[in-house]
Length: 219
Length: 281
Ligand SMILES: N[C@@H](CCC(=O)N[C@@H](CS)C(=O)NCC(=O)O)C(=O)O
Ligand SMILES: [Fe+2]
Image (cartoon, rainbow over all chains, first blue to last red; front, top):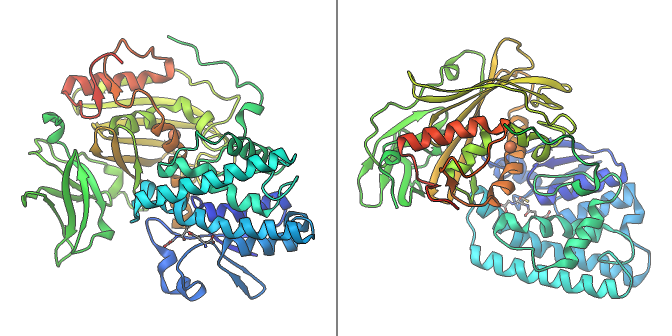
């Protein structure tokens, strides 16, 4: 399994994260997204005409949507991540996988605008991103009232993996996450999962680690 | 608000290999400029009022100035040393003071906490004594004999090593670090932070590297450095006060902050205050 990858891409990170959580072995092929724009070159457009990453390849199959890649990887390496095989849970997981595209199109775009200088209608992206976060917050509150800590049920699924990176990285695009306590709790639950890996802007839970060593002496 | 001494300095405003004839609009110290190239590919930088600004093409980047530079662009002799890979890491915009971006780069104590398990790791948080001076003959800030334990000092490092560092500030928004070069003992890898001040609290950072490393693919070198710098970005955007305080009494220096103290003193001496605050916070 090959992932055409960019270290700063939340959509690529989703795939790396699920691979780490399921123990799946994937081969990373770094793409010079910035500053090189390699994802817009002919060989990449041949694999993915929409000119985005991630691109995922396995056994002749090419997938170019992170939601599809998560589904495939879970089916192959960790079916529990697909959720229960009930109509309601299948529906909820699919709902959030589709929803995650709104996050890429809003928060994802605001982030590459603010960080990497890529063009975007920044106000529109921030507005749409804020609306997405409000919807996630509301859904998580509902879930908690029902006794569930995760988006699609009482255990983590690919729905959470699909929506969690952009939710944490929103400040990179000038979108505050301060107003959303449920999102904060939820992202902590995901970061506490065994096998969790980081990306810049998404840290491990430092506060659960032992105290750091002696504070440097003052002069 | 403009600052005359800083107006006469050189600033990075683009990557040489990415120039277009139409150019790209950007900001330099609050002034709109356009960074383009002519039909031969030579960089052309113009200001909003139509005046053509001085340019230099060096270290992978276009350099310009809004004023009349009294000094030539600083020298990095290693840039011309055969065998080095020159890496244009790509621009990163940061909502912070340009001086804060440089200062953070100079401070080694943040490695274990911000670049955990890469440039530093607990419990190896101690910064040992090192030397800092303002070298009067070249008018630069230098920190030498800096030593730090690093789990993964470079893309080419196989495991943890104690890395030697030197830091150098040759211009108010430029920091150059020299560090142990794992594949070539005796040489220094060169990693720079070239900072374009857009406003007093907004900058674009153009990291650039000159490394001895024949093994690692270019894209991996770029990603490694972007990963490191993006870990700094979130810290930088949350620093308070937003402008760099130049009153020496304000922040109690720890031993690790000696370079920062010298940097601030040097900025103050030259009146390099764009992005600084001179009043107590
Ligand atoms: N639908 C895609 C969206 C991926 C996406 O937006 N990727 C960004 C990088 S994080 C990208 O490649 N952007 C390039 C562009 O939009 O031109 C997915 O979720 O896989
Ligand atoms: Fe750093």
